[in-house]
Length: 155
Image (cartoon, rainbow, N blue to C red; front, side):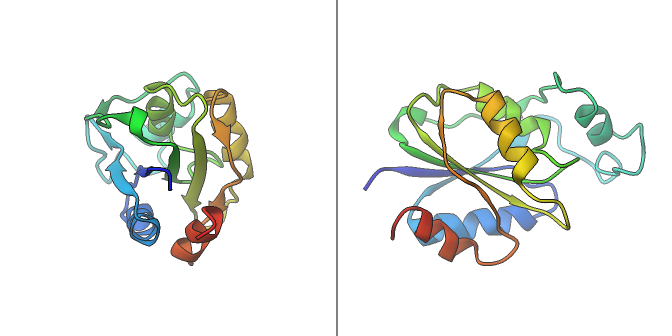
């Protein structure tokens, strides 16, 4: 079996729970995409046009700095990439992550959590950000993350 990694960004803990469930289910390593400058509650207030998250999402070129790196990324053949849906797509820090490594030939599998948005626009955005990866269809995993991940890997 190939080596798998579950890399995720979680602002409130919901995506973190799904990521841990997936990693446990498929025997993958876990890596949290952490911002160098942690988000405060005020930063995450999407109703405030001047909040950090709103400013980041309104700037497609924004790439928040990540704290820490994945050691030995070359050992992974499959990478699950998890995030909450922000403004119908992935948070910009996920783009930072994707642009930090060479994913050529690796299978990337997106998963997201959301209160109401689908993952379709995020999948297109991810593929545009990291075109050399072999993208597989993603899924919203508000429930049933483990069963979905096992099915994706044929377990």
